[in-house]
Amino acid sequence: NKTIQIMKIAVAGTGYVGLSMATLLAQHNEVIAVDIMADKVEKINRRKSPIQDDYIEKLFAEKELNLLATLDAEAAYKDALKNTSANKVTNASFVNADATEYMDKLAKTDAKIDCVILDPTRAGTTLKFIKACGKLKPEKIVYISCCPETLARDLKGFAAQGYEAKIAEPVDMFPWTDKIETIVVLSKGIDISAGKVQVEFSVEDMDLCNLN
Image (cartoon, rainbow, N blue to C red; front, top):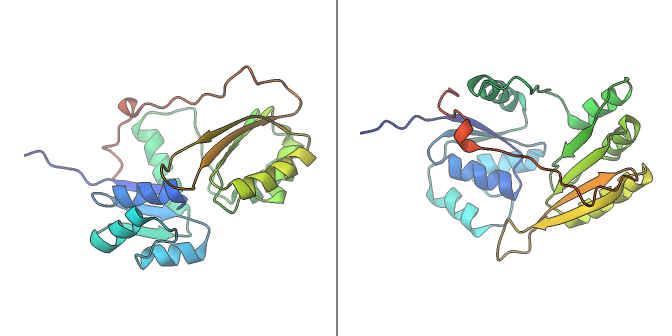
């Protein structure tokens, strides 16, 4: 019989995607879910779903999950370092800090940023983060949103910094629900409508067996 190795996995964010991944993986692995909202962390640790989803609620009620939710991003940071080592990645680095405060600090330097990719919670990003992007002047900003209302609000903030939404692509990740993911590409007056922002990812190239 083949021995199944239990992996230690960190999931950043407990929205629909993050919490779905965390609950599925936690059936056979040790999972730490990191979020910035204390009430969501508290509910998950009491095995109460912070979002309305029949499947997730059923997993909480019926399955023994090795799942811990925390406000501390240190665990996710350490697992990211383990991932880069296990997969021999040499062109990635990580910062263990609040995204808004880090971007604000970076904006006060002469840092050169080509592209900013943000995937915030349903609460959206902050005005301070948006203003920092305006100072850093990246060529492109890729905004991944799971809440149309906060996306619309934040796009107005980016517009005030001179960024226009050039591409908007809805992604139906939750069929038969009223939830939708949206990917928006913004730029400062640069016509990128004919281009693509592409991220390639291959599970086959990854070594997920050496994370303990």
